[in-house]
Image (cartoon, rainbow, N blue to C red; front, side, top):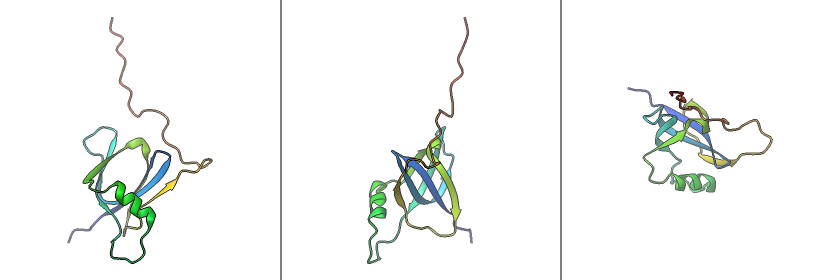
Length: 112
């Protein structure tokens, strides 16, 4: 039986740190983007509902796959089981920041 992989992806979006879980992560076909498929969220069968997970679940509702800019990804971990997806505020003064420059700059042509 094939092992089922679960990945925890942490990325920055509009000044907030997102933590999501997915079954597939790859470099994808778009240059400079990470492709994330089969997002995982907690089951709705529990009595206690976590509002932070409901918010992120609503944001990704109906999403089959998403493409994250490579410079916004903080880390990708392979984990044994998925936890609670969440959105947290990016606090000022922390050592977490986005990469400040573009990953690819086209060459300049000096043909005359």
